[in-house]
Image (cartoon, rainbow, N blue to C red):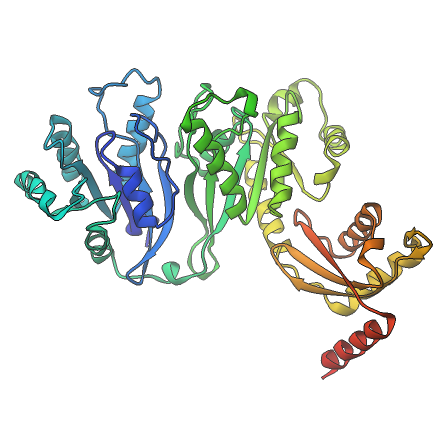
Amino acid sequence: MSQSSRVVAIVGRPNVGKSALFNRIARRRIAIVFDQPGVTRDRVAREVEANGRRFLLVDTGGLAFDRTPGSDDPLAAETRQQAAVAVEDAAVCIVVVDARAGVTPLDEEVIRRVRESGVECVIAANKCDRIEDDVRADEFARFGLEVLPCSAEHGRGIPALVSFATGRLPPPTEEESAAPPLRVAVVGRPNAGKSSYINRLLNAERVIVSEIPGTTRDSVDVPFTIGEGPTARRYVLVDTAGMKRHTQMSKTSVDTFSLFRSENAIKEADVVLLVMDSEPGPTRQDMRIAGKILEANRACVILMNKWDIAHENGVKEDEAAKVLRDMMPFLSFAPIVFCSAKSGYNVRRTVDAIDAVASSVRASLPTGVLNRTIETAQKKTLSPMVNGRRLKIYYGLQVGVDPVTVRMYVNDPKLVTDAYRSYLEKAIRARFGLEGAPLRFFFKARSRKDGAALGAEIAKLKKD
């Protein structure tokens, strides 16, 4: 069954409350809500579970058809195209109208176009905040569709709307009951080529691409699948707004919300794809974004985009990789893929890198091998001495994944220096790989006697 068989699209003219309704149904503030036409441009999507069903909820830009204030937006045509594609992809459409404003010519045109698509649809008469407001929804009954009064702001009528949508989805499939797809956040500075990369990977214009900075304002979920059946690999690519320096940001709420959404996309991702422009190479802002990835303890793949230009200028990949590692040593664990969204060079290779990194974040480090690695590392490089006391590591134990987390029992955690922590990390990475995966350490104080007893107890449990 295709992905479109479980897509619920929210459409309507600008400023009727589509994004507010999207957030209400998704039960999270995902889409940007702002009293200004044209804030939502791309399709914003999120997997939602309701009434025992899992479906993809899609928010769209206003279907303005060139007759709305603000139609001078240079990206208005692309916004309308994205909304129209959302209708084509949908199994169910929720047409949002403003009950307070009544029927407008633009509402009529939106409803007509959605009905012509043949998609199951319902009219959500929004802004019916009180029971006495519901009478305003009756005006929309003339279109011959079911009309459900609701209030995205207060939550009135939302259960009925969700029941309509889920009740008209096809029966659940194996894909729907499978594990959630891998979330891959595509982040970087404005115009680094994030949206172009996604469109090239999917071989479709799924997100708007423009030379105009700030084109992508929200975080846009783009699902895709490689293969079929039980072995299919499912992903959600999250296209994010370009992360500007604070000094470059305008003082509008939209810029602030966009940055918040991008940072949140990093925190929610299974893997973060850091896209950089190969021409200037890593900038200070690229390093700031990398810092956000490290703070969130997220797995990472570095994508050096526009490599076709650098290659024409005689730059070699191994040389560029060395410079990149020197400039960003804190991301030395992340694999680098040189690619070109324009030509398609190495774009498919990025998926292999993402898969490898996703596997690393859930790696299991056998206790025996881990401790032999720690012991060997201590023999090669003597542990630090602070105020006449030397650090002693008695035992190590993996206590978590995503990120991979190791607890080490030592004589005194205060004796652990940053340099020795880094040395241990390199030793463990060299033994287990962990490409692209963050590695966290927790040091806990234990006496030598306690450490030996703990080691004996775990050894006994392993033997049993």
